[in-house]
Image (cartoon, rainbow, N blue to C red):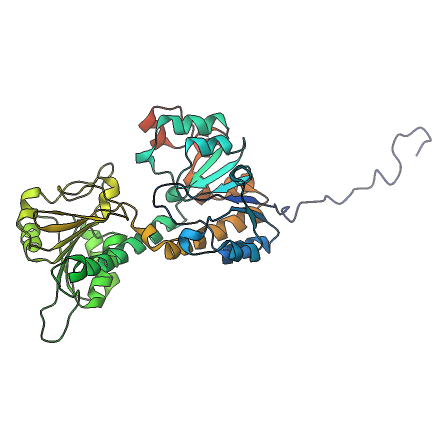
Amino acid sequence: MSAFSPFSKEELIPQTEMLEIKKQKGELYIGLPKETLFEEKRICLTPDAVSALTNNGHRIVIEVGAGEGSNYSDNEYSEAGAKISYDTKEVFSCNIVLKVAPPTLDEIAMISPQSILISALQIKTQTKNYFEALSKKRITAVAFDYIKDEHGVYPIVKSLSEIAGTASIIIAAELMSNLNKGNGLLLGNIGGVPPTDVVIIGAGTVGEFAARSALGLGARVKVFDNSITKLRKLQHCLNTPIYTSTIQPKTLAKALRRCDVAVGSIRGKERTPVVVSDATIQTMKKGAIIVDVSIDRGGCFETSKVTSHSNPTFEKHGVIHYCVPNIPSRYARTASFAISNMFTPYLLNIAEEGGFENAARFDKTIRNGMYFYHGVLTNKTVSEWFDLPFRDINLIFI
């Protein structure tokens, strides 16, 4: 090689190409603010989940008293490795903010630009201003009630629906007692005493777990739904003979006249269809119980109107109505445990993938729940509902 050659002998020898064999693990900085929505007592992470995250090198800041509604103390979170903060702004300034209820406009103002927000969307209760505020902050927002896994299941919604279904029967059993001015019946099957009759409208997850609980107590159960597939699946899941029928007005009215408890758990694309008229409710037994789980979408009983945990019931035509839209919050610790079990693997995976951007690029389940990406609206339903510009998230991540 000549003395004038710009390359040394070593440089001309083929070199081994260095490929990335391991993703750089990302550190998460998570804020858990205290819920301010009326009667919302749940929290997104339990102390055990916080411990799992902090042991993996992640930082978590929790607002003082955030876990009290679920009977988790600040001390439990502190011992799990979280920082307890008295400053709400510090909690909202974290890179990732976890909430159960959507943040208010005042809370959005405290979120740092380009942050990640994970909460419920609750589109029915939102305004256009909410989405415009998120867009201005260029926030990436994920609705946990829209996250759909590889099996086509909405895991958090399903888990909370299981709680609501089981709770609907427990609530009805409480309301039937003399202490709650009910008709004094025990929801069950005692030797020599006719069992109570329960009618369930809707054969989805709520209906399934309501039926499972009622059958476990020994009640006679009738389930109505217009989907034969759902009814057949329900019979298979319960593994016991059970009365099922499509929603035929005369058949349903006859069942309601005889029942002691009626649970409404039917869903609709927009508003829940009203399948039980005022006239039918007038024919029901005095002291019968209606638990309208579908009240968050309008309710399936014509006489239903929204109530609260602090004032949960009202009487109409001698029938006691329970129409609280957020039943899982009544059992806040169980609900928090269910939500936390869903969140923890997602958060650990986000870190393992090197951060939220990489995780969202390769994990379709996260993209399913995303409705804002750096301030760009990516949910078509929200776009059509509020007349806002929309871009397909799958095209953004090409």
